[in-house]
Image (cartoon, rainbow, N blue to C red):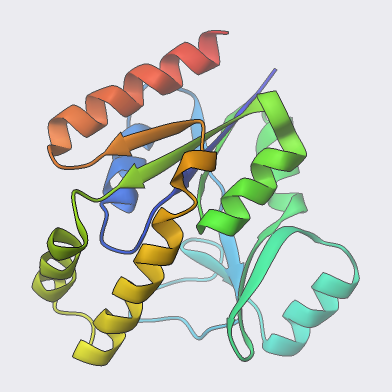
Length: 187
């Protein structure tokens, strides 16, 4: 039976890099593409990075019960996981990988229980997180401050996850994550 692997972390913790690495391993994983009501950025394509919906379409799909989980991050800026996307991947006999926020991750874990492994990628410290976000160079100082405030809130959820991976040494974090997923999938 296919399983679900949930990754959550504050922005800048290295979650997406670890997820990309896991997808490249021989673990029969497929990425669950999230839906969003924000506009595509740069080269982003519908159905590749995200399923892009208008705020109206998003609200209609919420009303229809199409989402496993969703969040309105800012007014009319929604992110969520479509049930149809997860069902499609499971029907193909693949294990589903999620890269979602903490609340969404815990909601998916509640729905699937023992069939899901929830992993929280922990930054070494808020200061390291600040340095990573500044080095990225994609956000204004105000946005970085907002992300850091949100990071402290998100870190408070870490104990509710099945596994906390400390990402202070990337190779060690990748190895620990790979080993945990492999053991979980072999259960």
